[in-house]
Length: 130
Image (cartoon, rainbow, N blue to C red; front, side, top):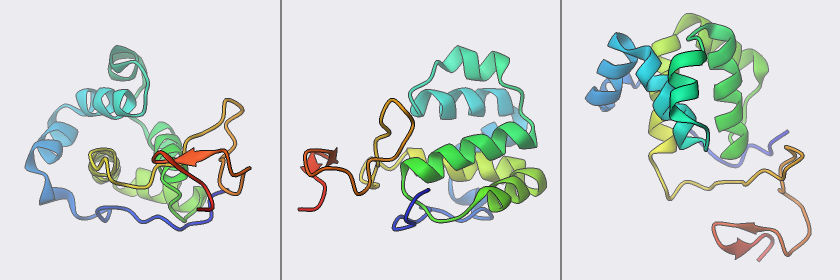
């Protein structure tokens, strides 16, 4: 579980801040899912064509983004936002992934955050704890 030191770059209802992402998530949600999946290191085509746009998958992807960027929150929050405002959640994730200066917490192959790991672990090219 993340410590919650990070913050979302935009709120769930800040949908119109990026008109392109707003249009894409409302009119072509499969393309938006492809872009989000690709930005998270996955295959664009896989996320675009084979990941259905439904609240369960949106909630899981939002939780992955939240954990990667050490943003506080929980599964209930992710599921509620994805169920009530799916397009807005896609825009929020897209905005978060577009900010390269955002604190990114790399995941170890086991999927465990390296926050609080040994000093040789790095975030943004700097050793953790320095």
